[in-house]
Image (cartoon, rainbow, N blue to C red):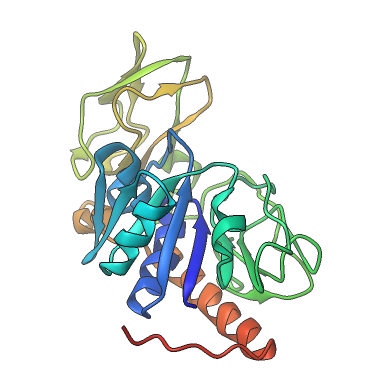
Length: 272
């Protein structure tokens, strides 16, 4: 058996999903009915809306049910299933479960779900909620595997890029359905309208590349994270590829996966 189930398919989880697929694992991504990825051009969760999502040579396909998901994985692609409560895990008994929802709290993952249960980011305690936690806070410990204890608490402050931190992330000023004016990858100027939340404009908080923007038609609430700007205007290609942070977190998750399985005496053949 080489099935890995990943809860969540946002941009950070996508780094881990992509790495697992490249290693030859069958990967089933469990998502909610309305994913809210900001960096959606580098997120497999977009398959929920579009039927497919391609990131760096790997394609995720939306499955209608478990049988369909098995067929998708058999074809060498990543399967995405709308299953917010992770009910498929009991039926499939995967080799490992990775919680990549990044909700900053545990919303239903338990240590008994699989031989190896790994969680990305804060809200989990290794040894209680899962077997290992991967640090997602930028800094010296990014990607570190934690086997006892928790990841650092969420500070609510984005990491610094080119001297900018909180200014990079834009939150909705009111409730409303989002309607974009700009597209991901566009260069925008500070104060420029990039979208509308209902009738209220959403303004660029700094000049740079619009790296992330929630999709049209999504109902945002006041304070909801809506967009992300990278001040480095020569980094447009980064909008469509897995980030350095996601790759680092993925390295920690893969390390934890193999260490846990080896300790438990599991052997597996990744050849197709």
